[in-house]
Image (cartoon, rainbow, N blue to C red):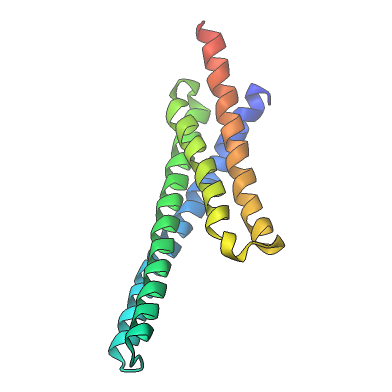
Length: 154
């Protein structure tokens, strides 16, 4: 990837990352709130009459809330990655935070794929692929800028 392509990639994907990350944080917080409300409503409604039923509701509630927390944290990393990528596209000397966050975002994308492993099928793979590719391209752009800085200052 040329340095000019890396600059454009950091800027464009950085802006997209901020926008999508904000939606992701909202969705993650919605999962946390929705999961909690579902569990509380179900348990308080009197519809669950056995200990096994209550345990199942609690487990499902916990899983939904955990997924919401993961989603919100992952999306927050995307927002920060976007902000630092746009900043680095203007000043290459500020690439380190974007580079580090691009590695974290790529790892989180892969982890997300494996978190859905229970229902692993072609659909799961195809839905995870854009996130992995997006993170990988941002990583390559950040790596290109980082290497350029290393050669330029050596």
